[in-house]
Length: 317
Image (tube, rainbow, N blue to C red; front, side, top):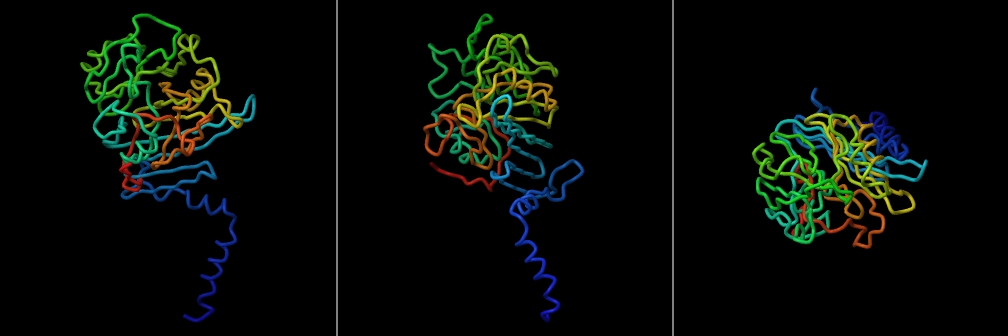
């Protein structure tokens, strides 16, 4: 090939080198060719762009887009919205710090994610490590079809959390319940194998839980929520708080965020320094007030997760 024939290729390379970094990032973040349903025919697509506030993943059964959002008024606020689509047998799971053992011991969330090679994860409820116990009521605890704790409150309380229920439905999807709506065995009788107990539930049938939100969660704090638009289409949100760039939100504001994303149901999980969002084994949110290594969220025993990928670095730590 002579020099003149090589010139167009050289000019193309030069043009790419002269493109702004943002333009190059935008190009690398672009979705590849997807099926009519919005998934890959085969393989995986992964984009990690913390500088741009954008993370993407796609496989034949899972598509995720995480966007970092920010407000300055009425107060500084940073939050992460993950929109998640599934098809086939892809379902939400509760993965453990010690494989096969729920509530065994706590470790850093990124280690839980890496040990299980999960694509996406958020922190879970309050049943952690030494809890539940006689001195701390964490509500109903059901994991993999086993009742680990069957006691909850007997009446409405202003105590936080209210111990409402997020149920993982057979075949995929969620449903939310008041703390005293069903006994533990009744959930098993409905075919429900796993629940999260924290709350309050934020949305049900598209309506905000105004009655429940009047009692708790009125202060600005870091928060974690998960919601469902319909089966196979989900929204997960982690709000930063307790630092100058983000003050956190009330539970009412959190419910409004979930409703703005058209969720038909939504549920509040543990917050504060427990709030975290994991993507490909890495914590992507900042935890205000964290004194843990690398600014990690609090040690946990489990993650609510979806997707498994060999691209997530597996660790034996």
